[in-house]
Length: 242
Ligand code: GLP
Image (tube, rainbow, N blue to C red; front, side, top):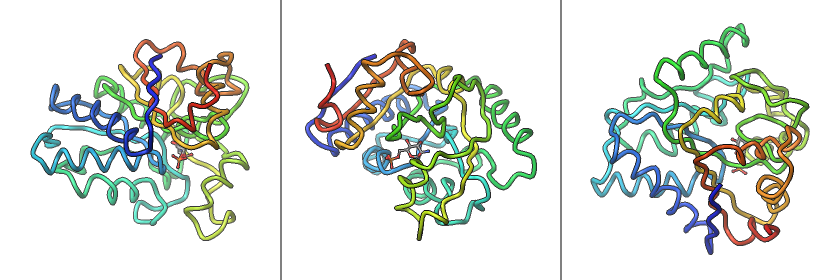
């Protein structure tokens, strides 16, 4: 696990985007794993800048997003599909037919989870995966629990995650109570992982992830076992690190 501490959010974004830009340049047929949330935004901004400068070509790139809320149509302004269209896909030359999400409107979530997991495998897995970090140590929507979930599955969101994500909705009551998410196994099978994290409110989660015990009570702690993980944090998120 490599931990890189940056002076501010912009530097976190630049540093993570440099890794994604390099991946796209190195292999124009890369499979990228993408994340939603405010932490991902500075990364996407810098990826868009590099694309506008003519450095990156997304024509052959495939993407898989980590998760999607259950019950939200792709056109819903708070769906993760909508977030990605607005904040990245519309601003680069990616073919949206090559951008994948679990279908939160599927009738059968078990079947849909299996289908999503299979489509990641069919494309030989993820080359580079972007992650954010939940305040409770969650990655994607893998909430603290008793055992690490392997594959894509349906999860009930914890009250703390609902409250944390309520800022994007009119009220906490509007936040969906469930989501489809890649499993910890899906994430760990990515060949390389970059996590971006900023702000003091996540300092405890960062310390537990990096210095704490490997436990499903802090899902991100599993990343200690991955051979190619880079955590890019600003100084306040990194302040409790040993
Ligand atoms: C949601 C997403 C996660 C993301 C987390 C942190 O719960 N499912 O993938 O990492 O939010 O979001 P933010 O970066 O907005 O704090």
